[in-house]
Length: 131
Image (cartoon, rainbow, N blue to C red):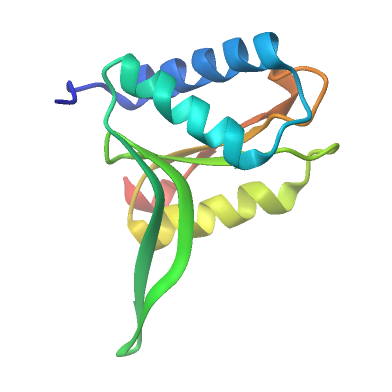
């Protein structure tokens, strides 16, 4: 059973877990491995975590049942996109912002485990339209 956490508490917990995971295992694994291990660690910390959740969108009466798939949804309010690339790319944050807008959620994180340090691979994305 998940506890009630604030956005700040959830993102702090996700970032802490990602940093620890990166410090222990380093860069170079598949995104799916980082995603699974991060989800497990967050569950151990008392968070409700959904992996590979499909999201439906409706646009002008047209419904797309599986419009996209998010890596992690933490406590039903924070979307986490896991990457493992050698560089940061602004497209990841833009993609996450689109997901947040379509889901009407406020906060998300892009975590790129492919960089030398986890700190360099963290991008917090805020959807100001959800407020």
